[in-house]
Image (cartoon, rainbow, N blue to C red; front, side, top):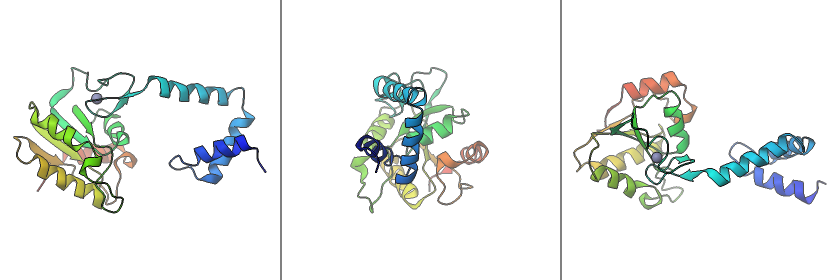
Length: 198
Ligand SMILES: [Zn+2]
């Protein structure tokens, strides 16, 4: 029987994506054995994230400043806006500077099954950005899942009255593919071959 502290930490870690109860307990044990080294570093890194990171009020990215480094970068093309479901997707696209413009993070995808409607996502903020002008193209970089495509169609219908070109990633993307699992070559190809939403 493990101590209450170990159980409590394991329970918290088990909520992390990709970590089940078993691997969470192994991680806790690993940290406990390294109380003076890795555990100290982990606590410091967690504290830095809590203390310094903020959400960008413009795009939804997280950074040490608001507006974030991407939104504040004058070398980026503000006429191109890439809409992603998740911050991880933004990072995937931005790893190799695949997209030269700015981003908008929705914070999820529409899902009747999970009860996630338009009001749960940053959709009004997206419409607001487009409505305020200066954007020529909106690239809908949704995952190649049913929910991702439903989300893309909904967004396209919300934006159809504005004078912007609406495109989506080409689906050489594997069906069911999530952006942040794709290698850069596949992602670059999907972006290059993007096509109008129709
Ligand atoms: Zn930003």
